[in-house]
Length: 169
Image (cartoon, rainbow, N blue to C red; front, side):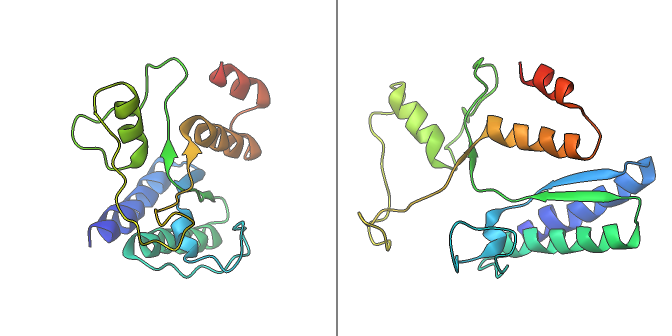
């Protein structure tokens, strides 16, 4: 129920706020999980969406809500970006992943092991349908994800190429 509350209910409230304040563009961070199990790879926009878990279903629900919102309000625009597992840090090292508690994804474990904070890296699971039996994941660097958001703003006339280059430097 938490995914539906955080993703669906909160997105509806955000859409209401966007309308109230007169914003014309909403960029939604969806998830490739909304596609479900791959019928072919790589995924593309024509791939069927058959999510297999509540998280993927909640992300797809928001995408569908945004489609209806744009159809009902032709002056509004929405972009849904689908991706897996954003990881990494800014090259300056000022912004990054270093959770205070137990990390909830692999990359902070790798970083903590490499820096000596952890003695070893543990991999859990050995019965997956992969070459070595361990899980396989796809990742996107957080800087690439930020660049994708900036390009979405450029495509919609919010930023120009010069502003994007300036923001990235």
